[in-house]
Image 1 (cartoon, rainbow, N blue to C red):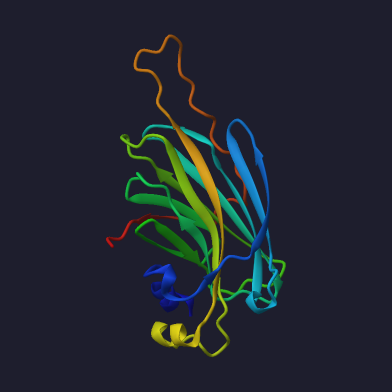
Image 2 (cartoon, rainbow, N blue to C red):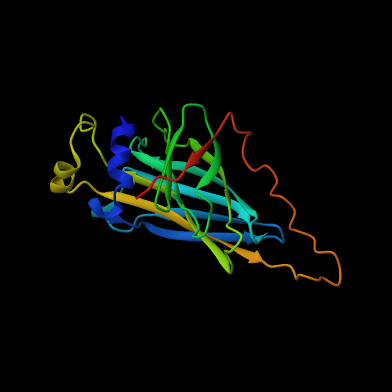
Length: 223
């Protein structure tokens, strides 16, 4: 059901109204990795989504030029209802090579267009359950500065029986979309050409989620 609707999603996030729920954030940083957690709360009754999400992201806070960044993303459905039309992923950094690797629960599929990388599973996510996605990008050797990603979930309030309605009709009906995106910043380190001492790259990120039961690579589509 979400397979056909995903084409609508990645074609433009502004196709239907998107609302950002009020967020309470907590972040923890170590020398090698950064972990961020967002708990969402809705303050306006008329803008209350069918499902709220708690987002956790773990990633490298440093990498070298031409190096890799691995993101470990978890999304827990806080309810009050199950989530059906939702996608996990987000916006990858600028200056990456056009191929990435990802791992997720069995049955997950992903698409990458422009800077948006989104994945969806086969089943609904019940209240209290967690979905997860691990993916790795490789920076181009000429990319400098800070690599910025925005990761999390986008969910739409689509009632049962509306899965075959086209995007124009959904837009006319005013179907609301909500997003929970967390900013992840990774500093790109350029070691000196003639170092006075050996440069040590940052240690790899430790396994954050259950080992990927399925791992693939996705190539960026032209947009």
